[in-house]
Image (cartoon, rainbow, N blue to C red; front, side):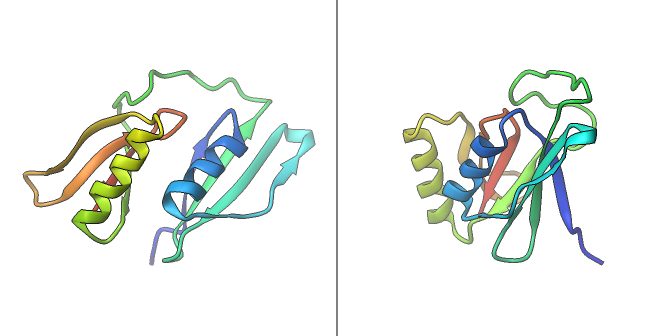
Length: 129
């Protein structure tokens, strides 16, 4: 077994898709729309086969949350860039481009080398070696 994909609600499919394409080399799949349900989505595919589904709804009222807030349930997405230098370079690029860097790069107590950033919707993303 393997995890097929993780799904994330967003208000702006294009903005979030382009963020993951630009910084994490995601390939943006075709748009899907179900007008009767007020639902739109796109799958983003990564080189190793992992996928992220980004979704927008017009029929549900989504509860707002502060950017980066940690709560019960899914709390972050970790993306390995393969090396400590890769973590440092991508973190610096994100910071330079105005994205929020919460932590790092740093070595954690459990041995990871990582930084923690926020995507444009305030979701926590760990960039790991």
